[in-house]
Amino acid sequence: MILNAEQSMVQEMMRNYAQNQLKPTAAHRDKTHEFPAQELKDLGALGAMGMTVPDEWGGAGMDYVSLVLAIEEIAAGDGAISTIVSVQNSLICGITLAYGSEQQKQTYLPKFASGEWLGCFCLTEPHVGSDASAILCKAERDGDHWVLNGVKQFITSGKNAQVALVFAVTDKQAGKKGISCFLVPTNTQGYLVTRIEDKMGQHASDTATITLEDCRIPLENLVGQEGEGYKIALSNLAAGRIGIAAQSVGMARAAFDAAVQYANERKAFGVELVQHQAVGFRLADMATQIEAAHQLVLHAATLKDAGLPCLKEASMAKLFASTMAERVCSDAIQIHGGYGYVSDFPVERIYRDVRVSQIYEGASDIQRLVIAREVAQV
Image (cartoon, rainbow, N blue to C red; front, top):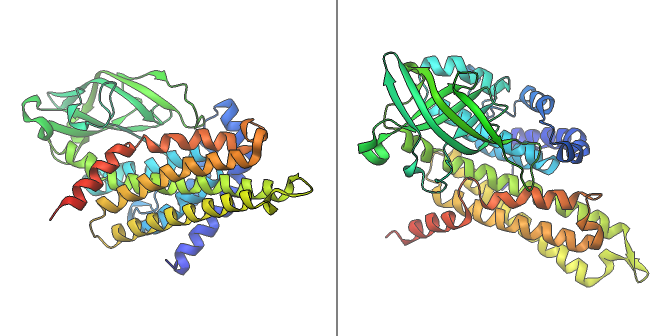
């Protein structure tokens, strides 16, 4: 795919920022678990927090191809920050734009798109991962309010977000059609951060358990219609999966670049590592896999921009890119030898950061299930 002038500009701008501002400090954030508040403000000023939100709502008004290019470049600088950016764009802005009322759009979208407010996507629960229809969190009417009770787990930015998109059961007897979606300010009484996960990687991105205890919100904070929550959640999963695929490509590329640099500097048996055929062939395979994943991501994003169905293509992109990224990062460690296993070199951190891409936004086997259903249709 050949990028147009605007897409190329976005790619270059985000690459410059990520390489100059995010990459040099990524290891520090990984060690300290420091939340990247200033970096997210900077990215908001660059338009990266609401890229596909129209100008009228304070967004950059760009296409989805531009968004995935931005996510890829940010991920090449710091994978943890790219997760926050992907959630903000694909899920928080995407759902508010598609299903929010005019008042909700006026209130929330400009602040989401600028990065002034972060959002978190509260769907997963302790006993519910892939089966979103089985959530137990409930919302009950009480006069002119909804009262929410339940527990949400593995919530990206759950501690640092200003607004939560919460999915809860409003009609237990209606099954999937009894789930609704709500905008919940995180300073609401009863919104409690009860745990921060101690994760393998992506330490700069907090992952929280949220407990909702008699959390009261106005009736007008319902997003869409009552009972539309399950549809709302699934409608934006394809967008989220394309974003995670782009993130996987970015992190794989960062590991590959580090491996190329090391292979050109390190000598063994009198010559640079890159001169050894075994290393050269490994780099060739890595480059080919990265490019293939990159093209799958761009294809899925192009379909989304055209308004065409892209569920299968989004799942293909995420499945292939996330699997590829772990393999490429592992190969990058192998090229580094013992140095690849220590934190002095970036490939150790990138490997830890990228592993989760095969789990969140739909685990790899869920992607296979989606793809199998799509290709089996007559």
